[in-house]
Figure 1 (cartoon, rainbow, N blue to C red):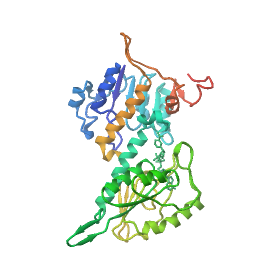
Figure 2 (figure 1 turned 180 degrees about the horizontal axis):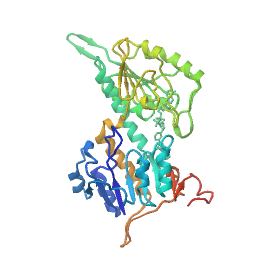
Figure 3 (figure 1 turned 90 degrees about the horizontal axis):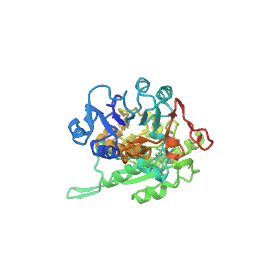
Length: 381
Ligand code: NAD
């Protein structure tokens, strides 16, 4: 059984799906691991380190004869089409927008798993790549904000006078938001945060930040995620947040609703209400933006001198640890569907759709789209 890891081909992608440290977890199960030469170049994972860890490093196409292909971003439809019938892929598949690759996987008889669809149950925490990558993005957001800011973050008592601490506001206190709070606090900022899910209040407080209670209707949806706001609710939220935004030196926005464009938390008018030299970091810039005027991968400077940093491939900006955490997530998911080699029997894949994690994260199987829950109804292939 051969696992292959190709170089990531998407522009700006610096992560790799397996780092050398985890190779032995797979070889111990009985797998052979082949890495495309140069795949780990941005993550300090050199070809020599892979070889020393027990993998084979090969130039050129490594995927067409593989049984399992691990990547960070989705394989292209052409790559899916080149795989062996019955092969398994694990990656972020963007199930809402990446339908071309999913269709190609279905036609090629490939079983394609989407990490976005791994259910958020406690047994699956070690496989939750959305969480591990959001952690990297939240950390990076606070550092970028501090770096762009012309101010100190901590309070300082100096002979030349006292420096007051930076006021940081985090909008959206999920995984990325909480990590942004923790990082901004470590830098010495005074942090407050808002989220539409009241259950996030205790988590915000446990990070040493203040939770802003706007006394608005809670928008707690299924699976711990938020629900979409009505336009009326959104306008009220923006109005009530304006005074908090106006007194902030750094605003970090991380708000998202799964499968939707990012909610608009700040209008151009609200940006204008901020002082010159203040910073906005919009982690949702790639999915439509929480902030009017933000552009993914760019720093927009308003006429008044407010800088809006739009996130693009943010976890990729911390490639070493983003790859390292991602690798553990995919190895844990693959291990769940592996029967290790034992007593002379080779390692094999056991794709058991009665397991909720496997069932919910598979998008295709047996030459067709996979529908979660089908096995309960006796329809799984
Ligand atoms: P996400 O990336 O979908 O959203 C980020 C945050 O934005 C969320 O906290 C959401 O409530 C918030 N948000 C959405 N619309 C908003 C708006 N209009 N205004 C302000 N905030 C808004 O979510 P996420 O960070 O991936 O996860 C959210 C929660 O899911 C976590 O905080 C946690 O409670 C839960 N979770 C559970 C597990 C698990 O049990 N294994 C794993 C990860 C996360």
